[in-house]
Image (cartoon, rainbow, N blue to C red; front, side, top):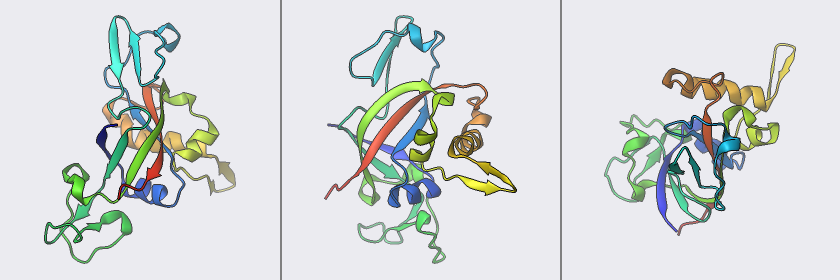
Length: 181
């Protein structure tokens, strides 16, 4: 069992805390050029082989732990003196980016329950809901979680070249909250 960091935005941290988020999709770096049907199956699903190259999920495999990095502040840089931006506290603090959050400051631990690879557009309505996306009413048209996820995806990934329209391969990491005490 390995422990690795993973970054989540404030809204996604709140979705995890509320029990609405149990999956995350992250872009597979160096996208495979062959269709997924031509990939060599591996029994563990956290690795796959294509064109004589092996990809390993950088987030881990079933049973591994993820410690959540989020925007934070610690006036005294000591355990017990940590504030989290996702809690919508201000207190006039100087917030530190999530990428700089040390392991000791994390409050959320996740245990990976499953890893797989798919194209981002293969997400189901149920999986979009497990991503923490809520459906909402927009004018008179009901927008479902699938469409909401597509919008969130583009807001985070389109500028990096991984738009919904481009339909990149993604790691699907399923998880549950874990009490790390």
